[in-house]
Image 1 (cartoon, rainbow, N blue to C red):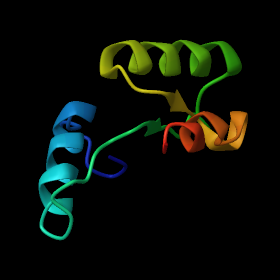
Image 2: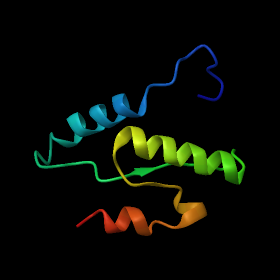
Image 3: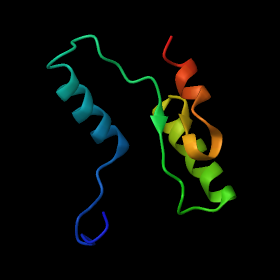
Length: 78
C-alpha cells in the first residue's frame, strides 16, 4: 500500500473472501473464477514466477491481462 508502509497487505485469500461476502448481498451464486494481477513493477521472470505461485496457491487461472491478455480469465467464465 503506497504511502502506508506500516500497513500490512491483506492476503489474496482474505480479499477473495471479503469480495465474495460483499457480492453475495446482490448475487448469492457469485463465484471466483480467476485472478488478475498487475505485475508492472516486476521483470518478465519475476512476473512469471509471481503468477505461477498465485495460481498454484489459489487453484485458479491467474494472468496479468496487460502482459498476457485476458484469454485465460475469459475462458474461465464458462
